[in-house]
Amino acid sequence: MSRAEVVEAPRRDPEPGPARRPNVLWSLGLFRSELVTVLRRWRTLALLVVLAAVPILIGIAVKVDTGGRGGGGGGGEGGPAFLTQITNNGLFLVFAALAATLPVFLPMAVGVVAGDAVAGEAGSGTLRYLLVAPAGRTRLLLAKYVSVLAFCAIATLVVAVSALAVGALLFPLGEVTTISGTQISFADGLLRAVAIAGVVAVSLSGMAALGLFISTLTNSGIAAMATTVGLLITVQILGQIPQLHAIGPYLFPHYWLSFADVLRQPVYWDQLVKNFELQALYVAVFGSAAWARFTTKDITA
Image (cartoon, rainbow, N blue to C red; front, side):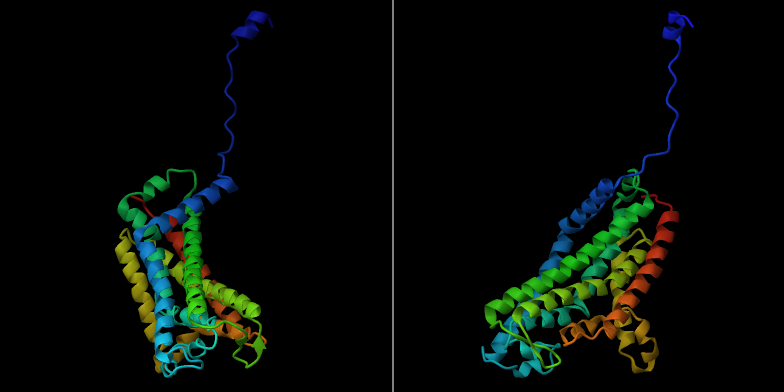
């Protein structure tokens, strides 16, 4: 072959290869973007402020009721668990605040965020633009669910930190008397408070998956949030009806207050493990349902 032929030979385009998949760093960026979007909403910030205010109100109420005296006040007899111990040790305000917010306030906040995750994007017309990026529906849905789980942890942490700060300001701190009657050091009690906050956050994972599934069923964020919160209230009512006690162990809030077993010496794991297994079941069932719905959904907005 002559030099002229070599020069004049047409250049061949490279063979098309497989489409490049988003790498791990890109996936982390997607998750970070989703989490920042959630935390920047005024609605989310308002929910966190309300959650932070609950321990403040409990602490002030106990302080006023007892007049700063040691030993539980009379108002603690009908209050949440651990309420009578707050005046002896401010660390118990963390446990009391989590026990007070877990049945209603925390799951309602999670229900609002989870219900708005997909439906809110569809209602505002931004969902189809998110799908233009090379993320894929599965990756986008996973990023949204992980961001909701992160909100569960943040919301729980807000309650715990607020309660710890108020408890330290209004009441003494010291050794912790466990439910079993034994004494543990303040450092050990603080570690158990962190563990309890983690258990509470995990307890909300099942409802987060349920809310995300509901969010994939509609293009209205308000409808999804209202349905999720309404379902929470309905399930709570069903769990209180004696005639329906047989279905109680299958309702996602049934083992929520099992976190109290962390304050036993030694820790009772039976109810805690059942709680984790139940939440994992809800995550598997409703997470799969959300994936099946979202990956086949006709995105028009």
